[in-house]
Length: 183
Length: 123
Image: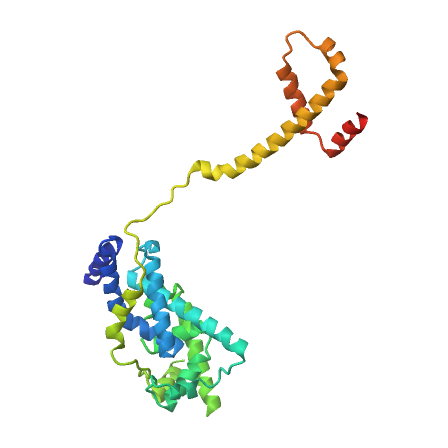
């Protein structure tokens, strides 16, 4: 209930042109870290994640008048972040295809990345995740790493819980298969 | 599926292998706010002037009307030259020239190019 009160208060401040900027700053402070990690797990590179995060907040700021109050404002921004991440992935994939770049050396790239703290096993897991279709990738990350409930994910991604469970199940199977082949 | 999921969890864990530059989150909010454009203080509603929205259609309609009237005037003038003597004797009492003009205008507006060529070639 306190959460809802806070959300209402923040919304009121966002609606008021005099307090809008200050309220948006509060929103950025409250949600940027959580959003960053969701984005980072999707795009993997820190600089890319930083760009996508900035684009997310920029889009939210420019479209504040379109927020219809059908969900919490944080959910709305979260959704923008997911969509921006997807757009980024699609654009990167088509750029890589155009340039003939290899999709298969994700693990090596991560191990060479100064902002990757994992070992070879974790790099290979990330490589397996990178091979999943985009939406499955998001579902897997949210469920596996964030342990997000399907009910919450359903509101966020506007998809049925059944479809999300199926998506996660397929993702798990594909990752398991990937490692069995590697082994 | 549970077995496969357990396999992944046991082999790879659930730790976050990614990291960020020092102070990244502390600085992010201020940097972000500096990039945001100024929002307008109030919603600016553009009130469309009815005149400005119908003006193009009116201009087209006016052009067509001028063309038709010009055509009418031209053929009316030609017609009068050829049939002036006859028409003046056949004119009905109380018939105003404006009523005749409207009928001719309506007739002319329904003519196509072939009709016009025929009239011109007859003269």
